[in-house]
Image (tube, rainbow, N blue to C red):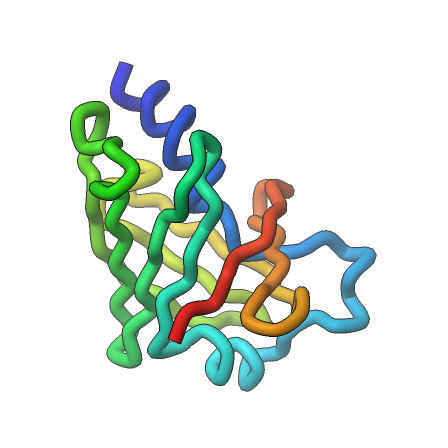
Length: 131
């Protein structure tokens, strides 16, 4: 039951950081990812409205908090883990979300303060870059 709830609410939100092959022309490289993402909060659009923040800290830690979206009654509302950059992809692994499995995203520029993302499983979306 918890896995179904996690999939329904968090999966679409947390997978918000990569992009399809047709956008290869503006695909972010390692240095671009560092400049645009590291040290900032990325806001993922939640399927039921609102935004889901992920904070990519400069020390390699990533924190996510869905309490404002009210998901705490259904699954663990916040989690932390680590992020890294590999082969021009932003990768992350949380302690409990996604059963602790790693995931990576191809990112591309989507305009001022936005990135398109494609997760390694093919899911796509757009995220807003905070300060």
